[in-house]
Image 1 (spheres, helix red, strand yellow):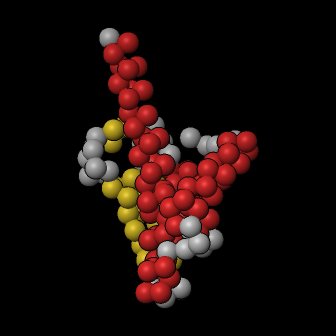
Image 2: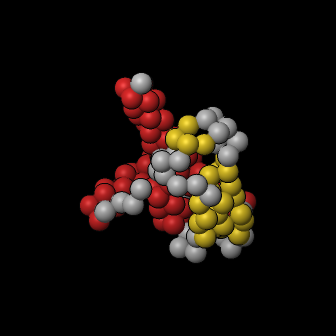
Length: 127
């Protein structure tokens, strides 16, 4: 799914609100324990079978926290996946990964859950 300009603006506003709720003025533990330029590679792996949705929004979360984000999706929005599938591999500062992971996963889980349920209903109607 590629967001149009209005959808992207709406997503940016929601991301700002979600980050403000999740971390407020910053993740104190992360900011005190993790060096600011420490970069890591992380993977998002599915916990259940389903339909992926929200990769672009998850990417926006991490890009807001690290402009040097490297994002390599392994699947596309709308793909059916099995439990244990790596859906994205990305590199960012360790601080950005730790600070944004809950917000990004919240968006991905919610959007993928809706996509999965919608797919099940569409299959049921199709017979």
